[in-house]
Length: 348
Image 1 (spheres, one colour):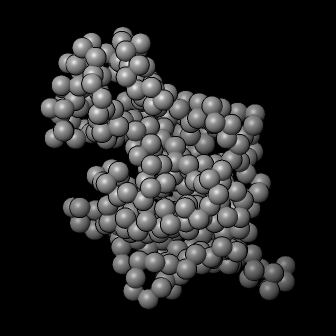
Image 2 (cartoon, one colour):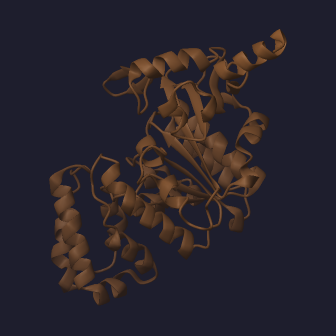
């Protein structure tokens, strides 16, 4: 074999030629220059019906990256349906915000702190420039959090049959999503609303379909991903069917999107005839991710030592993010987890 060919093969196998700069820095700010042409060539979005991004719920890199990715897929390929790891009530409030720009609607919701404030502001500014029929739509498929109490609140008189439910809702504004008392309250609300469906329908009127979906949401309230995957996928499939959605982008935690988990959303989706061979996934690896407890180095589904080795091998430190085909990553488990791997600097 000729020496130059051997060198090229070695470089390809090392990933050095294929880990390309997907985003670069803008000074010391959290903003970035998103490489649209590179992402077009790596993703070839026209070939896929579902693009799923496996995130780690970071609050610096991911909001800015997701904003660029959503705008890229919408402007270039007309993908307007965005699925997120939120409940039905949260998705409703996000959509209301995208229309009105009223930040009070999304105050305290998940994915609204730190640089997610810039994300939603940018998404709203982009969305209101679009014709109504082409505007972005957020879809929730996960369990309900405490914002459900906000969405279910009414300004009109409550029928006697539902008075106890609303009294308990009004007294529960200090609960958090993972408080057992909130889970108990949500189960009570759902049970009472199902039992008194006629009164609920009369009370909510045109909002009844939304309330009905919330009442039927049986996704377990847990931070563990696998117990939720099956229900989340059922909600995803229902939303695709009920809204005639043929293409979409989704943002979920890595345990919901990795090919290494049999129950993951892409594994379930690929079994559908309409999506077989039409699903593309990202897996992400981050350096120095921020959390309220401090900086966490090398975050992801794998051991920090493994991620550090791979990150230092494939990350160009002059870039904010590099992306390469997963099969070119020198780690069998990671290369089998997704179609593309993104290495990024989160906390600056």
